[in-house]
Length: 198
Ligand SMILES: Nc1nc2c(c(=O)[nH]1)N[C@H]1C(S)=C(S)[C@@H](COP(=O)(O)O)O[C@H]1N2
Ligand SMILES: [Mo]
Image 1: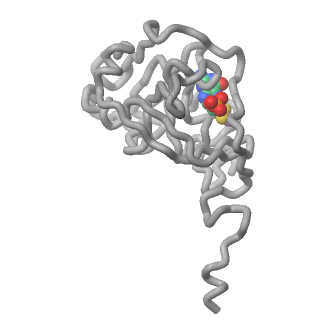
Image 2: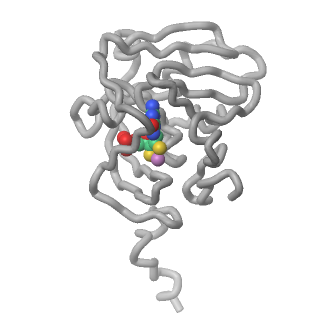
Image 3: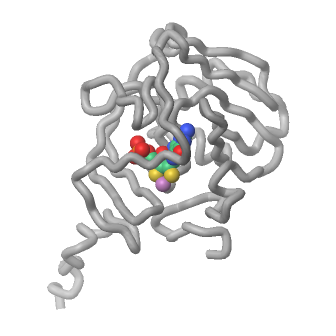
């Protein structure tokens, strides 16, 4: 009887691998269009929309508390990777310096090259979310979004914009790049929210 409770399916590591995902130890690169490459000194994160306008430079971001976190990531193309370690500014720490206007419920991430992806405000402000510049002790590689990217590990990885340039606060949900092309508006891997009709 007890065995029934303690036996875990060998391939999902006790619920750590979302449905339909396979573990990889590699770190695949997934970019629509060209990869971007620029110096950290060129990094800016503009705060737009339903918030007081503000621009964070690279120096501003490094002056904020820096946090290192380790978690699993899940790509909608069916790979998951355990124990990725990132360093950067937690979204909750950045939010201390952002004045939202009444009615802000969602946020659009903007990237160099025009990539966008939308989040609910409560998905954006989770304590584990990072604006990251370091991966596994080294500067984040350009193809993975360096100098600066979002990491929102509880949603599919398309919800983590590489080469972040802006955060636009909104009073309604609006689809970003992949969401306009059929991906789910929220993208929870444990609910398998891959496509809009799911
Ligand atoms: N700016 C930008 N950010 C992006 C993408 C992109 O094409 N452009 N691709 C997204 C997708 S679909 C995934 S799965 C992850 C991939 O990150 P990686 O290349 O570091 O694995 O970045 C996301 N962020
Ligand atoms: Mo992806």
